[in-house]
Image 1: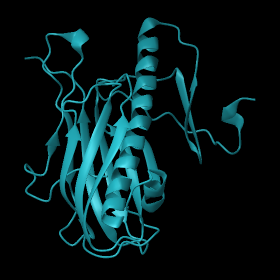
Image 2: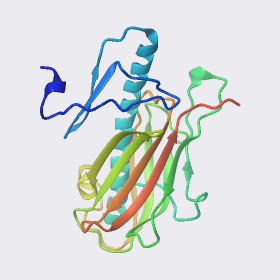
Image 3: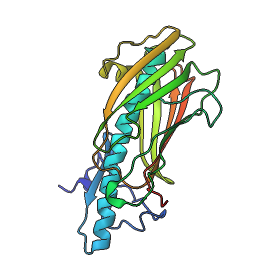
Amino acid sequence: MDPRSDPVRPPLEPTYKNRGVIDRLHDVTTYGSRSGLYLSPQPVHNAGSRRRVDFLHSTLQFSFSTLTLTMRTFSIIGAVALSLGCIATANPLDAQVFLSTSDPSQAPLAPSKGVTYSNCGLPTDPIQIESVEVTPNPPKPGGEITVKVNARATEVIEDGAYAHVTVKLGLIKLLTKEFDLCEEARKAELSVQCPVQPGHYTVEHKVTLPKEVPRAKFTVDVLGYTVDDDDLMCLKLVADFIPHPF
């Protein structure tokens, strides 16, 4: 049966337009369901279209991996202050962690700007991120990275805290998801679980990056809330994997 005719998965109009990366995607149909985003490749008639489809597939694969990484990472933050998230509460420049990754097959190009985590929260937020370490630096596609977060909970964080995570490619919204932070902390088998008492916490988590990282600039926005829908934290991630000339 054509999945686009499935009443549980109503068809959506394609929203991917040229933002300097993709010009048109008539050869890909997107449709959604409660369980996520689906792609239905259509016949591709030329090399240009094939490259666009391959790029889209690679981009979405990376986006899902980024979403998983963000989910686990920010659930750690939630569980850290509760029980990820990667910034300090200093000024905007000091509150950033820079990573870089390069494609050795494209020499001579300078490494990409990599990944930046920044804190967009308020001093009154129940979760205060004090520091974050990401190793190895720079990370390698297909390799494992370790994220170490030092955070402080200023009040008791009850079960039911959650976060809205949005992954975008330029102005194009690729994925939007809501996660239960305490549930993700349990899945990750963290040593600190909800409810979390006020205090300082340090948590480490390992994540494997996808083997292919698209040459594009992604942003990940995370808005955290308590079980009572009050502000919990705000985090922003920018992943720039576009190599730059010397």
